[in-house]
Image (cartoon, rainbow, N blue to C red; front, side):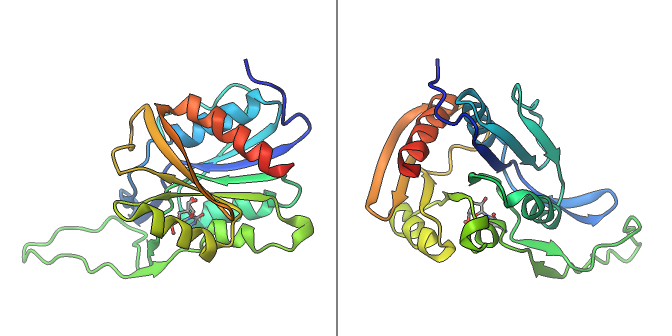
Length: 218
Ligand code: C5P
């Protein structure tokens, strides 16, 4: 049973992948089941918070008592998050946001032609949602927590990412074997250094992470 450490607090999260359209029937996405983000949303709610989950496409039901807004693209996720960010106490960016969208996406389905021509996709960069929230003026800015999924050099890359995005806490997933799994292993990076949450079920880790966030909020 979770202590009610977040009663009266507002927690905003992103979870799942984003989906960037190529045409009305095709798109580009990232590998993310949404399980880690949904587990954190559930743990925050268990701790008494009012929770808003902005979610890309996943197969998961919203956790009990959590308000969910569904989005597809990174731009939509950005717009919904930014319109709700002020007034939140905590923002946890767990979503695997696509770095690029297809700038020449087609309104109509692209057709194969007899010559075997292939479409040329033009990419443009998506906004960084976490960095945008982390750079809000102090009185509008929630306590920001980022995630990092690295395939190598986690210690170095994750701390560099924490500083670049200007967030007080960044959570590294160990390895890239977490996608779709029920278990994970986390490393927490803050201004004092790093510490590990050993391999466990994602809900257990989510509850531990909420406790870590609460202790840093003071
Ligand atoms: O730069 P990278 O994508 O590795 O950073 C990961 C962290 O930044 C995650 O917390 C992710 O949700 C967030 N992010 C974001 N908007 C982006 C890209 C990443 O909020 N466009």
